[in-house]
Length: 89
Image 1 (cartoon, helix red, strand yellow):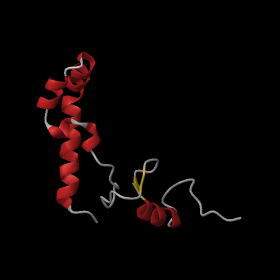
Image 2 (image 1 turned 180 degrees about the vertical axis):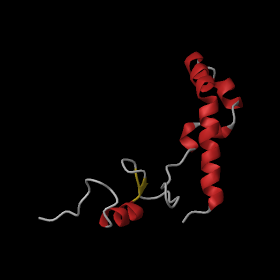
Image 3 (image 1 turned 180 degrees about the horizontal axis):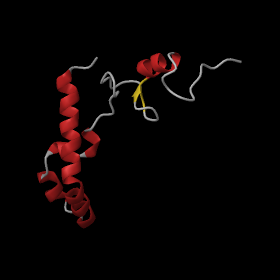
C-alpha cells in the first residue's frame, strides 16, 4: 500500500492539471514558452502518475483495469472482474 501522502499529492497534481488545461492549450497554440514556464510545475500533465485505485501502487499499472498487476491478479482469481478468466490451453 502506498503512503496516503503520495496518493493525495497525486490527486492534487491532477486537480492542478485540470485547472490550467485551457490556459496551457492557449499558450501552446501561441507558442508562448515564456508564459508556459511561469505556470506551476504541477500544471504539466506529465507529472501525474497512474496509480492503482485500490493500493496506490504506481508500478505494474494496467490502464484497462485501473489497478496494478498484483491487485488485478487477486481480483481476477476471486472472480471480481467480469469476463476475466485464467488462461488454460
